[in-house]
Amino acid sequence: MSGYNVAIVGVTGMVGQTFIQVLQERRFPAKGWKLLASSRSVDKKIDIGGVPHLVEEAVPASFQGVDIAFFSAGGAISEQLAHEAVKCGAVVVDNSSAFRMDPQVPLVVPEVNPEAIKGHNGLIANPNCSTIQMVVALDPLHKAAGIKRVVAATYQSVSGAGKEAVDELLAQSEAVLNNKEVVKERIPYKGAKRNHQIAFNMVPHIDVFDEDDYTKEELKMIVETRKIMGIPDLPITVTTVRVPSLNGHSEAINVELNSPLSPQEARRVLSGTPGIIVMDNPGELLYPMPVQTEGKDEVFVGRIRIDRSVPHGLNMWVVADNIRKGAATNSIQIAELLIK
Image 1 (spheres, rainbow, N blue to C red):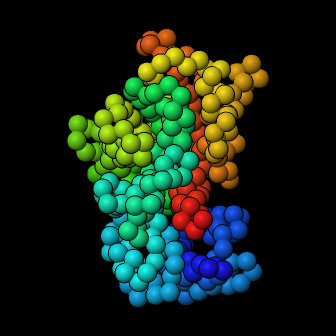
Image 2: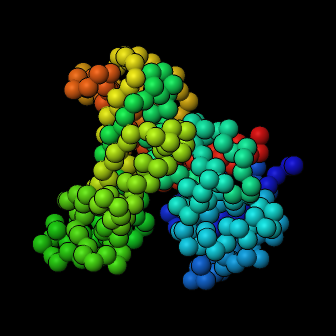
Image 3: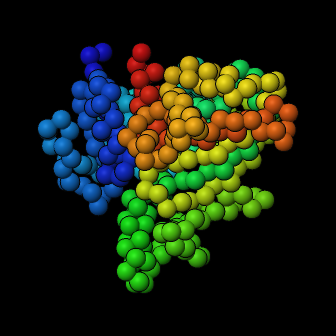
C-alpha cells in the first residue's frame, strides 16, 4: 500500500494536535486525513502541510475508507465509536482507558512489548501516560536483574488534565502574583466536590478515589504495568501527584531487584536501550527535568543510585513529555509497528 487514510478523533485537543505534528515529523505515510471532533468543532480548519482540512463531527459513518484511526477524545467517545470504526475496516489505536484492561485488547509500549500487537482484533490500547514512561525505564532493568518490587511517586504536569487545566494554572499564577482572587475549577478534576489551587501548590490527587483510597490514576499504573510487562503478580505501589508545571511528567521510582545491579551497570543497560536517554552526572548537576524533555520523544532517566534499605535496591528519576511519548508518539509508534 502506498499510503494510509488516517483519522484522528479528538483532533482539536492537545493530544489531537500533537498527533498531526508527530505524524508529519516521523513522515508517517498518510495519503488522506479525516479530522474528527465533537459537533462544537465542526467546520473548523486545521492546516496540515500547508493544506487546510475541515473538522467533521465524529459519527459511526465517519470511518468509511479509514485505515488507521487514532482516538483521543475520552473513554465515553471511544466506547461509543471505536468498535464502529473497526466494523468499517479501520485499526483503532485508542488513547483512553476504555479498553486497556480488556484481555482481548493489546496494551502496547513498542519498546517493551511490541509482539503484543500480533493479537489485535482491530483495536489496540495506548497505556496511561505515566505508565508508559515508567515501563520503558523498568523493562531493561527487569531483563538485566529481575524486578521484585516497585514503589513510585509521580509529579505530573497540568497538561495531563487538558488545555483548560493549563489555562487555569496560568490564570491562577497571575492572580496569586497580583493578589487577586484565585479561581479553582479544574484540579483535581472538573466537577469535583472540592477544587484546589494548583498554582504554587501540589495536589496528591489525580482522577477519582477508588478501592483502598487509591486514585484511579494510581490503580491504572499498577494494573497496566503488570499487563504490559507480563508480570501479573508484580508487587507495585504508586502515589500520583499533580504539580504546577505546564508539561512533562516526572517520576521517582524505587526498584527492588532479584539480583545485584550497580548504578554503573544500570546506566549502561539503560543507555543501550532504544527510546531512553540517560542524563545522570551529579557532579555536573546533570539530571532530567521537564523543561529539557518538552518536545522530545524519548524517556529520560537520571539520579540512578543505590537504595541501601533493601537488598539489590535502586532509585531513579524518570521524566518524559506526557503529551508526546505519553500519548501521541507512543500511539504513532504502535501504528508504525502495524504497517511494517
